Length: 306
Image 1 (cartoon, helix red, strand yellow):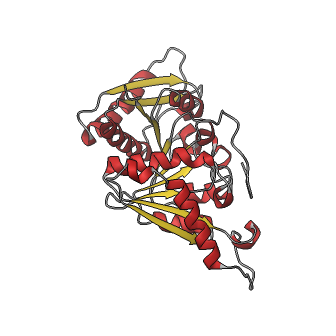
Image 2 (cartoon, one colour):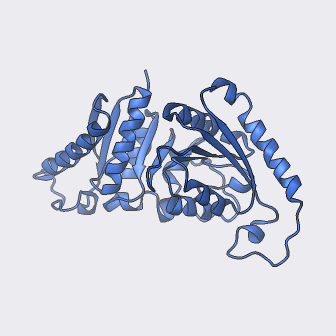
Image 3 (cartoon, helix red, strand yellow):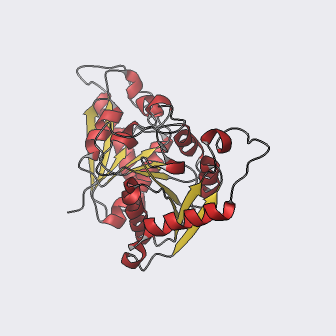
C-alpha cells in the first residue's frame, strides 16, 4: 500500500496552496491525503483570530475544524477522488511533521505560514525538516508552471541517488521532461560564490564542462531505461550554484535537490545556498534526503550557516 501524502495546514494562503499541491501528489500516487495541524501552548500557534489557549478547549476545536474543513475543500477541488483524513495534534509543528514523515511518502508544506509555521523553512530552522524528515519534503512556492520540466540538481555523491530516483518518478507522474543540471564551480566558494568575482579568474571551461557531463552520465546511468516515457535534457554548467539554480527554476515546475552532497551542492540545505533557493526559487522545491542518513547526520559544507 502506498504511504499517505502529508500536508501541513495552518490556514494561511501558503498552506492552502500546499494542500492543493499535496492533493495532486496524492492523486497521481493513488495515496491517501493526510491533513495535519499542530499547535502548542500558545495562541500564536492557532489560526489567525483564534482564542487564547484554553485547557478545556472551548472554541478551539470549532476553529481548528473550520481550518481543516477549508483545507479539505481546497483539496477536493483538485482531486475529489482522494481519500482525506484530518489530524489535529498538540506539539511544535516541526516535530509533529517530522514524526508524520516517518509513515508518509511525501510531506508538503508552504513557504510561509501563520504562527509557528511562519518560520518553518526560514532562519535557523531552514534545514530541520529536510535534514531530519524520513521522506521527501515538498516546499510549495513560486508560480505554477505545469508545462515546465522537472529540474534536478545533480551532485557527485552517493547521497544524491534518492533525489535522482525521486525526480524521475515525479517527471513520469507529471508527464514532464526532466532537466538534469550539474553546476561546476571553479576555484573556492569565495572566488565564485561571493557577492563579486575577482577581476581575473582563469580556468579551463571545456575541461570543467566535460567533467560536469561525466558526473551527469554517472548519476543518470540506468534511469532513462527504467523511465522511457521521460525525456531527459542534460545541462552541464560552469558558474555560481545558487544563481544558476534560481535562474533555471524560472521555467521549471519543480526543483529537486538532495539534502546534502559534495562539490557545488555540499550543504545545499544547511547554509547560504539553501536560503537562496528556499527564498528565491521560482517554483516548488522538493528536498530528498539520503535514506542512509539518520537524524542529525547531515553534513556541513562550505559556507554553512545553520
